[in-house]
Length: 286
Length: 217
Image (cartoon, rainbow over all chains, first blue to last red):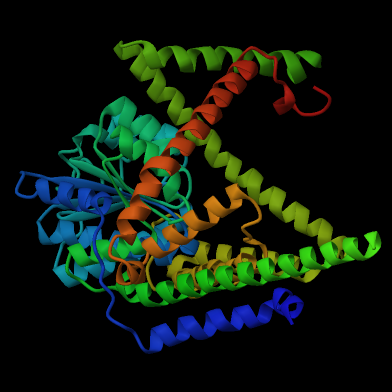
């Protein structure tokens, strides 16, 4: 019986996960979402620049569709917070497949908040180079991006005409699925051009970011779907991340229960094996 | 020929490596301008690398198709996806390839309804495999494995609201694990990684590491 349970067909586990996640989506329970200090730091930094003339935030979309469920809600919440506080937002992408996601986020929020393209926000699109693009932006923003994604001159648009270099932005937030936070933004933009940087990342990469949080090179971090849900709580808008907390909680619980059952079976089996080997030894001696 | 195959690339790597490092520490406008110029060159070269990537991918799958290798059907989809997306991008909803991508066209539709959906689904499938792997392999066999297991359970619970519902201090405990033991371990790993990166960069600049030249070098 125990051997059978230890070698259970993996499709049963898949079924448990499916049923658990589906049940949590169909019958959601209200769960408390408490924003962590790292998430609050990003939120508070944006709040602190409201009212400042020409306050502008740069959002870098450095992720692809695979990380969309985790990072898109944060992008939407940050854009929403900026627009509600009349802070200008400039979007760019270090990943080519992020272009469509960035446009979707900007389009939906700007429509809802009644913000105008070119005046309140713009999207610069994707450019190659990552590190060298940041170095170019650090020296001459209009040289690095002379036109936006739609072909408008950045030196003429109200949203970007006052931006001379990377340091002109009041805050930079990178939404990253890969190594762009530490490999690009922290190393080149923060250390060289002394910008204030916040990050949003997938849950799987967030443990790598803690050394930069402690050193202050990263002033805040929105980590995974849970972080996105915390940010939605702060901006007081329930979005896909908040709704995603129920199925994610269910999935985590099922995984933990699986670990407990798996380990219980393992120890019972180990005990039996030991007893059998002891009794076998005694029989041999007698 | 050896001059073009070996000597010239080594000289270029040495000169560009020394220049790129030096200008970082020279607080003069000329150094800043040179840095700006070199970064623009780098971006142009990087853009051409995309063509090489496409060529390499299509070449690899053409070989699989020719040999009717196992799973060659997937290679058909690679070509199909490439041709369809490229055609949609060039057509650009009737505006042509020289202007910014128009909304609402075939490319936009394919991106949202095929690419985004397929990519997100692929990652979603991971949750099933993680559960199965956790059940089968995550065992408290040794003291170290037990510590790892307990830490993993705390982090998994502390990261979701249900953790706070089960025990109020779970999120704080999770945060402490991330801020102290995790951070200390990560810092050690990162120091090792970056010292290794510096050593490799110096080996390339001084021509000790030559594997990037290809062949027998």
